[in-house]
Length: 96
Image (cartoon, one colour):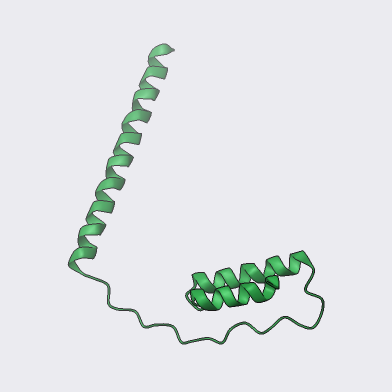
């Protein structure tokens, strides 16, 4: 039984090492290809209007504020909002 476990452990180590080396080679090769063939410039997304202001209902509800901030964060990550637009909308939501 110890010989069987030793064989299984050796196989696991060899397989893990092979996977690590393969991944490293793939990343290195992908980097070389990216250097040789730079990606074509992407068109800037069309400007989108800032999100509509919150309804007249009370905005003091913390979960509503959190949801609005999450939406703003997603818009900023997508590149729809600039840093300044994000900051302005965030201050409006937080009321500061």
